[in-house]
Length: 100
Image (cartoon, rainbow, N blue to C red; front, top):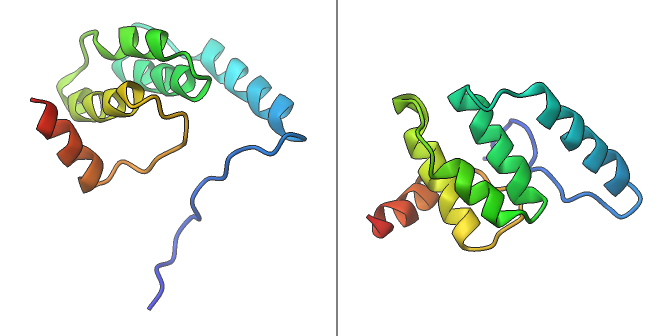
């Protein structure tokens, strides 16, 4: 039995890279550094660009309680130096809990 739903995101191909970067740049300008959920997205954008220091600084700030676990899990990916888009699943959360 197969699961339905969206397929996993693919990494941009070289011919699509400029459009991908332009979209992320535009998205980043629309987000607020004051909003917890927006900061998660900003950290994800920085991580995907390979700006791990910037992503880490964002993720080590204060987050609303409903975003704390996602921020911590995203920080695991930053500390691993991963630029890949990942699904936040139980395995990733367990890796975070090992750091506590």
